[in-house]
Image: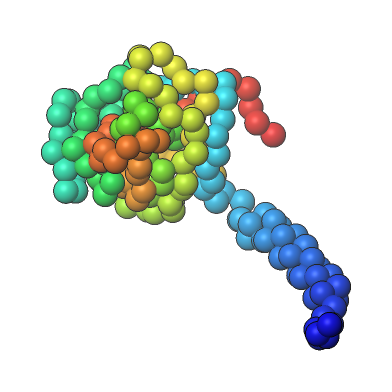
Length: 195
């Protein structure tokens, strides 16, 4: 019978396990230490009231055609308009007639299963970048009702806003290969204060 060299996987397995544990612990605590007070952050929340940002105009940029009224981007009635022929790469500039004070922005993921929905957005307010934010709330069909859960971006404190810019950095449908979709940018009001 041929003799095979013997290998001991035990030391390397324990070393790998220890390395993974350290990486997990280090990775889990770095954002908590690295986030300064007042830093913007995003997450999926329930029990949020969606409100119109205010009155103003909406300017669209990007390689897309728009069907419907672009100002519907600010409407809390979540229907399927406006429709962008290509959602990925769309950039919207919302210019408000009067400044509003915001703490939370909501980006509902509205669309049918074969529509592209935003997966990541970049936010700027009055020329200041607040960063890019992955979106992961469930997709909400455009029925006009309020979603149960929505992506909320906490701006880290109250911000006076005259112009809000949102760029769609990632977008994809749940199924199929369609590129068209819609976008909403709304003020979010928490029902109960979060500690």
